[in-house]
Length: 459
Image 1 (cartoon, helix red, strand yellow):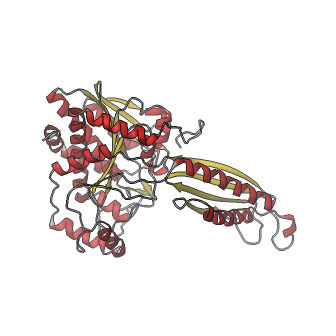
Image 2 (cartoon, rainbow, N blue to C red):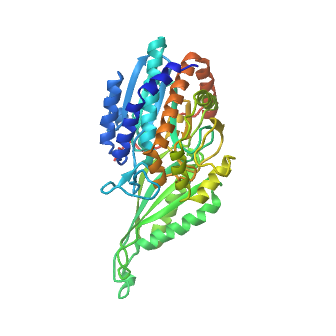
Image 3 (cartoon, rainbow, N blue to C red):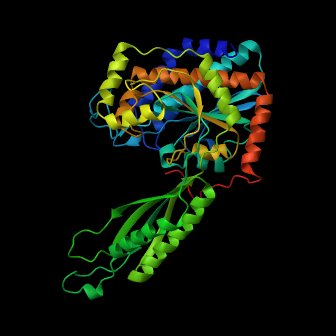
C-alpha cells in the first residue's frame, strides 16, 4: 500500500498524538486566544524536525510548520479554537467542567492533532523512501469566528502551495464535493435620543425602533433574494427599561449564500435597509463588519484520492462500551439520530458509523473558512466518524465524544488518511495536474480577493 510507512509511523506515535489532542481538549481556548494550544503544537512540530513559524500570516496564534523542499507542496490545514458555553466532561449527560467557559463542541482538538499526525506520518514516508516534496502544516486560529484563514490568506501564509487538505470530525467517513456557504458577519449600532417614554416621548428618538424597523425590512428582503440566501439576526442591545426611550440599540446579522458574490450583493442591500431604518427614525447607524469568508469549492479529483485512501486503511472496530456510550447519547437527541441515519441510508439501529469512505455531494448552509483556501489552491475536504449519529454540531454531545476514545479513533483514522493522500500525490504528480485543471475550471478566470478590509486584525 502506498503510504504504508506513514501509517505505521502514526500508529507508532499514536500516544503522543492523542496526548496532544487531549491537551487541547482539556485547555479549550477562544478564537485568536489559543495561547496554550499554540505553544504546545509549535513545540511538538519543532521536536519533529519541522521549521516552525509562529504568528504565520501576521496572526499571532497561527502556526506554519514546514518540512522538506521542492514540489509538490502539500498543505495540512489544522485548527484549534473552542466554542463558548460548551464546557463538558466525557459523559452521557450534560456535565459542565467548573471554571471552564469554553469547550470543543466542534472537535477542533481532534482536527488539529489529526493534521499533526498526518504531517508527521508523511514526513517519515518521505525520509525513508527519499521522496521529493514539501509538507506545510498550519494551525489556523479563529475558525469559529470565520476569519482565521482569511486573515492568514491576506498575510500570504498559503502562498506556494500546490494542494491542501482539511479534515473535520463528523458522523461518517466521507470526502465531500458539496458546497458550504460563504458568509458575512456584521453589527448595526443605532444611536438616537433618550427621553421619558411617558412624559416626553416626542423628545426621544428610539434606537430600538430603528433596530425593529431594520429587522422588518430584512424580513421583506428575504422574498427578493435567491433561494440559497440565509439572513439571520439577534438583537444584542434593545435598551435598558421600558420607561426610557432607548438611545442605543444593536442588532447582529449573518448573511450566507452559496457564492461570495451573492453574499456581497445581499450585504450591500442590507446596509441600505439599515440606513433606511435610521432615516425613518431620525437616528444614526454605524456598521461594524466583523468578518466573512468564502464558500467551499471542493475538488473532485482530490476527493477521490481521499476516499481511495480511506478505503485502503482498516477502520478500527468500535468496542461494546463505545457503542453503548453512543447509544446513550443518541437517546438525548433521537430525532437528530434518526435523520442522520435516514440521510445516509444506514440501518435504524446505527449509533456509530462503520463502513467505507464515500465521495458525497451534500450541500450545507453552514460556513467554514477553509473556503478561502479552496479559492487559492485545490483542496480536499473530508470527514471521519468521531461522534454518535445524533450529536448536533456545536453541542455538548459533540464535545463529549471529542474527548473520548470514539473521537480518538476517528482522529487517528483521519491522520492516516491524510498521510496516504499525500504519499499518493507525491507518487502520482499527474493527480495534482488534474486537480489544478479542475480548480482553474471552477475559478473561471477569477482570482481570490480577501473578504476582509485591510485594517481588520485578529481580536
